[in-house]
Length: 293
Image 1: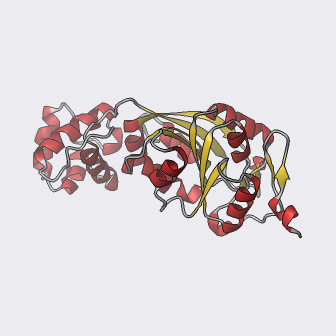
Image 2 (image 1 turned 180 degrees about the horizontal axis):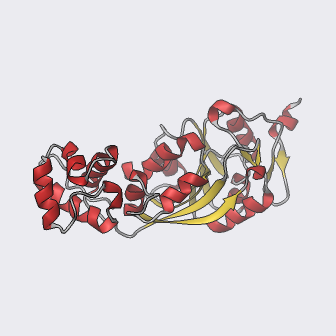
Image 3 (image 1 turned 90 degrees about the vertical axis):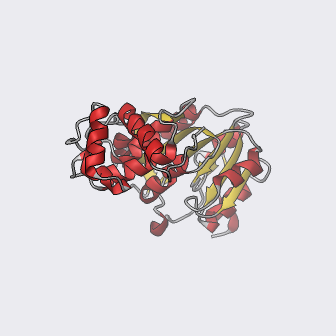
């Protein structure tokens, strides 16, 4: 095959016509091929001039083309060197900044700064299923200037992330993400929309950052959530003892907060996590008082 065949071409609307690439299983590649799904995702992102977009795992450019064509400033992080060459050939700078590397290890702030300066960004992407957790964790573990995310992930994960905190599907990522943002389901995507088709259903979700976090003491919250969900079968007072404070201490404090010490951490509402984190940050000399903004 010659270079032109490998690197594809552009349709009149700015979409890439994918070249002859074989998906690499070790990187969890499933290329989005359904034009209707692409249109729906782009409409949800609503890109335009002046907008800064960080695309995680652009692949062969199904979303990248419409994003670039909208006039948005687009930066992308791609781990596959062959696809990096494709994207750079289709969308030369300054239309697109392509950063070669692992998005789970790359400094998103540095990438966005190079493309957009100090402007806040919207994160988008068809996230590799095996990396969804580590990638989304960067939203609450780092002080990036993100304001919104529109991402595709495994449907089972989407259900947990969008669940009400305190309900059965919710987990530790639900609490930590919803402390900073609201989460809603936008679109269900069947396996047939991809090449090759994955073995699971996919869902597009929107994550919209709150003006202010529900729990201001983020370090204390992360410590408590790790303790509570790290021992999910234990009653709350005993699970929280993993923070270094005794079950008896926690039983007294939980009673002061009108929280049943016999429930499990997964039953706590976001407001209850806020009350616990505020209390814990005052008690633990090692808990940072840093506010997330």
